[in-house]
Every structure is written in structure tokens, then in C-alpha cells.
Length: 318
Image (cartoon, rainbow, N blue to C red):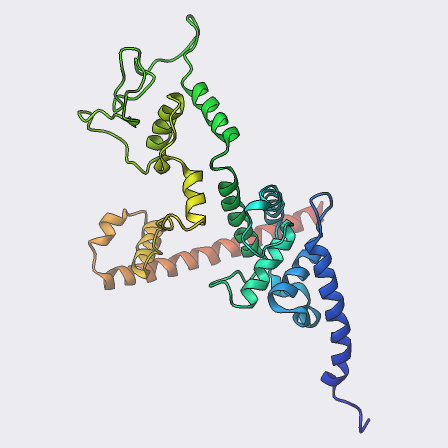
């Protein structure tokens, strides 16, 4: 009828009511504890409210949060439990509850206070998981309980079995040859520093797991303080407190590297061989491989559909 308000105008008051309800529900989610279940829909709606605003939740529902899978849900519960156990190490301004911290991350990203902040709930779960791990590192890096647990594990790894016990002997010493030992088979320290054998040519890289675990065990069993370079949790705590430079991250692969990897996967040829080819030849070869693989995929799908039809027809005839 003439004079009726436009549809958008009629929806305005309705959206206002729904947005207030969505905002209230999101605040409820922020207060939820680990003693109850967390419905997926409520989590997604609360994230949309925190990240994009209550009006967006009222207008589009929880779709803006993206999907949430059971693995993400389990990871979220672990992250919230870890966050709440170490809440004293939370950054300034963060709430004490795990879900509250999740939504706080969304609000920070919405305000532009976090560069590259998460846009979907799955990425927010990952961000909270990493934050809770850094908080645990800050809270427990110098813990005597953690130190004693590390000592106990080192003792179990280097414990000598009783005489007569069945065991495989790969070396005479409990320590690798690149660690200098005394006549009792214990690592040698000078001025608190572990001594390595310079005549051993195959010392593991300093950033390898084998090197860090062996050196860490030597210090722990000697009752000495761990060097920072072999104490991963202490490193994480110091980086979180900006007392160490951020860890080196592997730079993303270039388009050429991605094409090389894809061509090696499709052809079975080693990357070292493919790298010697000219870029134009590689691109043409990759285009042909993609076409052939796409054709094979369509043929296999057509054959499979026909097999399904034949199977159903055969069963219907029985």
C-alpha cells in the first residue's frame, strides 16, 4: 500500500531487538566455564558479535564465523583450560575466562589493534591456543616442579638396566661420542659448560631435537641450570616478554617453488632434476600434466557413477 515504510525501514526495529539479544547471549558465552558443554551455534554467534558486531549477527546469523569442527572444539577446550590455569600470566586487559579471552581477541581484531587478527572462529581458536601456550611458558619456565619433572625424565632415559636384563647395546657409553665423558661415563663440565669432543665430525646441528635433548639431559643430570638455547619453554617465555627476538619463521614459498613442488608430485621427478629445466618448459609440462590429471579424474568419476548405477540396478532386479 502507498505510504507503507520501505522493507529496510520495517526491519530496522526487528534487527535492533535481535542484536541486543545476540549481544546478551555473547556475554553469556564469555562467562561459560569448562563444567558445561558449549553449543557450536552459540560459539559461532558470539564470535560474530565480538568480531563484526551485534548487528552483523542479527542480520546474517553465525555464518560470518566460518565452520567449526570437532577437532577445533577439542582444541578450544584445551586452550581455555590452559589459559585459565595460567591466567596470572595473561596480557594486560585480558579477562580471566578462556572463552572471554577468545572473544576479547575478536574485539581487538575488530578495533584494528591486532595486525592480521583472526577473521574466522577456527583461526581465533588457533590464536588462543598459541597465547595460552606462551602464558604457560611465562608461568612455568622457572617452576621447580617443572624442573624436577625434567630431571626425572632425564634419569629414566639414562637409567642403566640391572645386570641380566634383556637390552640392545648400540654403544658402550650412555652418551654419544660427541660428548666428552670422564672415567665414570659422566659428561664433563668446565666452568658450568658442557664439553663437546672436537674430534667427532658428526655433531648434530645445534637446532636439532637430538642435540637439544642430549645437552638438556646432561645439564639436568649434573644439577646445573639449563642454557636458554636448549630450554624451549624458557625461550617462549622470553619471546613473549620481548626479551628475545621472535623465532625465525620459514619464509613462504615463491610461485616458482610451488610450481616445482606440484610438478614433482605429478610427475614423480625429483625437484633437483626439474630445477635444471627452463621455467617456460616447466610451465608447459605442468599445464599438460594438469590437463591429463583432470581428464583422468573425470573419466574415473564417470566410471564410478556407472558402477553405482549398475550396482543399484542389479540389486533392484534381485
